[in-house]
Image (tube, rainbow, N blue to C red; front, side, top):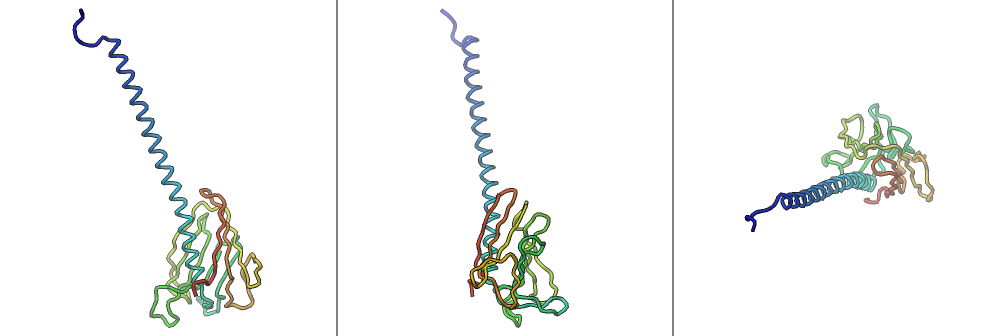
Length: 194
């Protein structure tokens, strides 16, 4: 008859089983944390695309056919649009600005620029003249942007340069190629919120 207790072999087997269970638990926990981090990163990236799309939809949907004046008092057309190969991508005047008491009503000047690989939205305090802008970064890691503008006849133009300075495009196509999202094509109606 042997005394009560465990032998050394039984203890080693129990410790080995406990070690394997602990290793499996740590591996599962690590995998869960990595999956959560990846999910949050992908949701943040998708959120950047959705936020930029929402701002562009709001701005372009409220575009006003109103010319403005630069700091020297010279008239500037209502909508400026490049093909995406310049720093200034788009400039427009939109309805729904903050200054309800101004003579021209609640209007706001908005520009979209490409600055060091970032798509930025600039909102100006005044429509006319030179004003301080509030800059909001929208997309980072932009490798390339291409813009096209749909005219009244249904054709697409690489730049917006109409003979009538108050004429707005019907739609804008933005194709962005970023490090995080790859190539994304978005279409926006212009002046649909009139």
